[in-house]
Each structure stands twice: as C-alpha cells, then as structure tokens.
Length: 225
Image 1 (cartoon, rainbow, N blue to C red):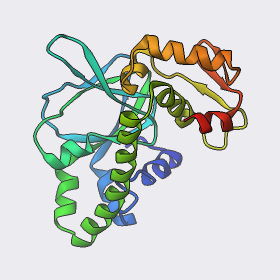
Image 2 (image 1 turned 45 degrees about the vertical axis):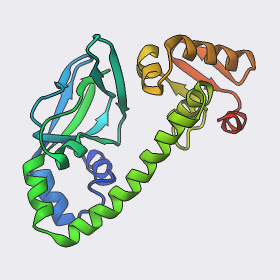
Image 3 (image 1 turned 180 degrees about the vertical axis):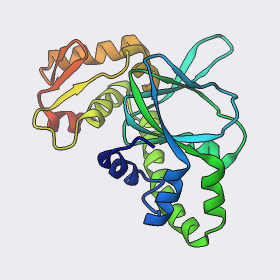
Image 4 (image 1 turned 60 degrees about the vertical axis):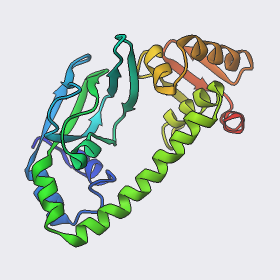
C-alpha cells in the first residue's frame, strides 16, 4: 500500500482503527489499498454490493441519494480524517448512497470481509470498538439535533465554525463544495445559504472572497450558533 508515515499516523487516528493493537492495525493495512479519484468520479453507486469501507486522506467525498423525482439529496460531505461506508459494512448488503469525489481525492480502501473476520474472532477487540463507536454515535446524535432544532442561520454558522482548521493562525474557511451541495447538506435552500452569508457580511462578521470565507469575529459567531 502506497502510504507514507504521515498517512499511516492519520489513518491510525481514525475512530474505527484507533482501538486496534499495532499487530491488528498492520493486519488490516495488509488487506487494504490506496485509490485516487478525479473530480466528479464515482466511487460506488447506491445499491452496489458493499465490499469495502473507506478513509479519506485528502479531498472531499459527496454521499447522496436520488429521489424518484431526480432531485439529489446530499447526505454527507466526507472530509479528510473520516471513514465512510463502515455502517453499511456492519449491516451487510448494499451501499445505501452514491459516492462521488468533489475534488481530487485520495482514499484508503479497506476490505470488509477481512475486517469483520478480525472482529468476530476477537472479543476484546469487539469491546474496544463498541467504546469508540459509541462515542462516534453521540457526536452524530448531536449533529442531528443541530439539523432539526437550529435555524437555517445557525446551521450555516455552525458549518463555518466546523470548517475552521484547528490551530489556524488566520480564521479562513474554504468552501470545498458548490454552494448548492453545502445547502443540501445543511437541509436548506441555496437561496437561504446566500441570504445568511449576505447578512453575516453586512454585520461585518465575515468577508466573502469567492470560495474563501474570512471569519472576522469567531466568538460572536459562536454565540450566534
């Protein structure tokens, strides 16, 4: 597998593998590979057999479903440091969404059959995985609360704050997906997203330069969110 030391440390920190011992991690790694996707390239389609799960090293993956009307609903934008399709692995069957690269993307592709065999043969590993997955579930529950209880403006502000790089010297955020995709992910209309950004800009809380957003007052935005 074509991974450098930085990639390996990044992967080790992913919630699903952080519980593995060094030997277990090496065994999982031996049954994986790295794949690169070009912008717009499809990784898998909704209904395809679920044979692998994935970790994003760089780039962005869009997970979406298509309504009978043909309208696309964005379920998630998967950024570097995150797994996806692991729930489908544990449930078995087929992928419940489409997966597309929004930009040039590098992925670690991990084999479902081998990983599940490792888990089934090791009760201690099962316990460790349950702990890390429970923590992950609580994070997702909080995200659902934000999407259902918060206003459109609060969702947009929360999204901007989530994109802020940890420890960044300058509070700059880059929209790594088209605005209509981000709006769909937040459960709002593109017009609402544009309106909220305009209001925040008028209040001088942000500046907008194309796909770059400068957060002028992070603390004030946190209070609003």
